[in-house]
Length: 116
Image: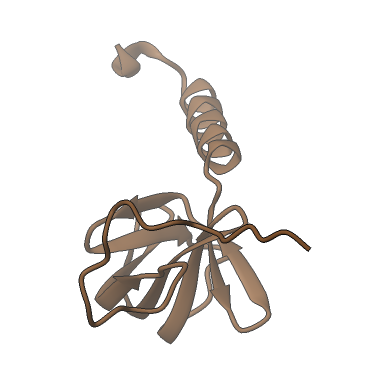
């Protein structure tokens, strides 16, 4: 079907697809004080727009909106189809509490209420 569409229409469709992808993604990378939007994310890495993407290398933080998801060690691997592809050397999920060296019981109280 795309063989019969004019080049201008194909370009417009591609631009609209990229704009929708940018709007729908809440994932972003924090590199120090700089924040960059992620277009795609998978187990081995992520992709950003090539024109706005920096040459990231080293430790970065991945967020979904305001929620901290991962600490990552990344490197730039390649650029293809207008996207800069980054790959993980490692990435670890961020937890909201410190690691425990004992088994936690499932029925322990969350808080203690006392009378004053």
